Amino acid sequence: MKKIPILIDTDPGVDDFFCLAIGCAFQDLFDLKAVTTIGGNNSTDVTTRNALDILKLFHREDVTVSSGADRFLMNEFGEPVAKFHGINGLGNVDIPHTEKEKDPRKAWDRIHDEAIACEGELVVVTVGPETNLALALQKYPDLKHLIKKITVMGGSLTTGNVSEYAEANLWHDAEAAKIVFDSGIPIDMIGLNVTRKAPLKRSIFDGLTDIREDVKDVMERLIDFRNEEAMHDAIAIATLVDDDIMTWRTTHTSVIDGEDVRRGMSLTDDTKEPNSRVAEEIDIERYYDVMRRMISQYTEKPVR
Image (cartoon, rainbow, N blue to C red; front, side, top):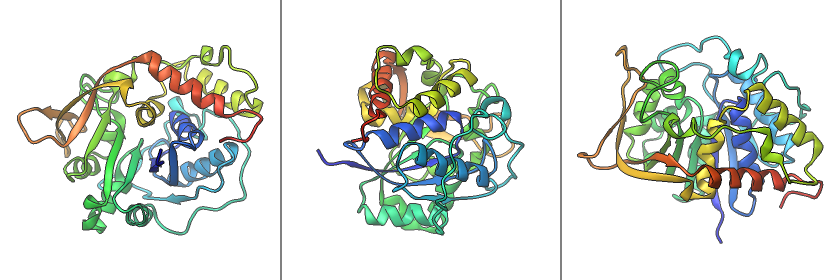
């Protein structure tokens, strides 16, 4: 089976850690072309360093990291979200540092370069604010014809988590999200309405043997830091491993930006031309199966 070329745009981030874990583990399925970073959970310098160190932990230093914007399109970043991601962005868990440095290309240039190289087959997984992707679309008008699909962790078909209406990734840079959703690139939106239903508990390790102790220790500590709540970003990328994790609805999705009280809200309209699939229900056991398969790749033997 031909591998899926993917690029992960991320702001590591506790749940971003588990997203990268999936992207790195399934080497028989994914051709992980690059990781690009954005601030949000912390500064872009911190999230970039975290991404580099996470790749080292997963023995994937063959994957390079390009850093992106140090502010949103219209606003500066807020303070680090220490409550949900710790002071260091990784639940205050220390992982070994790599000597490897980031790629000199900026995130938006890297996205365009990889899209060209993949000849229209690139899937972009965006699990943070969508600033980098919006900047890439603004700088390179041809990009909308070069990306096969965007898998988005963001939005909600019900209620948000930063307001009654909005989920954090879309709310933080609603202007960027609007550009992305209006681009015409097919989008899979995995929102809070489904991710909230799938907490990640320590019991995910039950019955799994020969797991690398360093990986298991970090994962368990991050699960504990989040009090066994959902790892939203992992659920988004897991849909690329098993599409049947979700029940999907094909529709038109847009994002409200500006000063509207509903800023960051994702709106669906079945009467308009579809631009997206939105996840409506989650098969939790299928998702847990993907997570256990991912963990099982991190044995004392080399990852396949």
